Image (cartoon, rainbow, N blue to C red; front, side):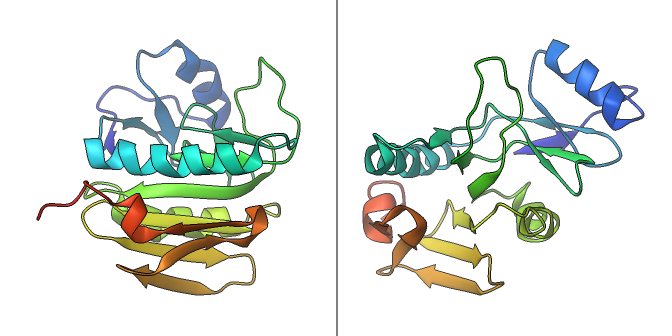
Length: 184
């Protein structure tokens, strides 16, 4: 979830990269201004956690890293800074790194305030990353997964379908991911 910054923002990406680590909360850079990342719902956090847990278990013992929200992803030819809900990379990460190198998988959980950006702007930005194999968006209010792959396909999976992540040999039934998170 995000909200535009009301204070005088940094004017360039370089100023943002120097400014952002000193802030009390996390910000993305949309190419023009900082955008504060504000709190989300339990469903939002839990969906990302469930995918994170499944990926960590499936990829244990491999050289990949699965990261939740703390490392930035540079997009749009390194002119924008994003903090996806979950990112996977096969590239080495050093302890002091703040930027995720060569993401192969990105997950965003959609919210009312960020859904349009996640489906539009971020989708285009992530698709331009040469390393990215798959971008997944999960609705938090219905069992829906929107899956975009490197080949350019765009598929929506609903209710009793599964989220298939062939890059990791993993299939996640949507009913399991959403168990206990939806009313009714």
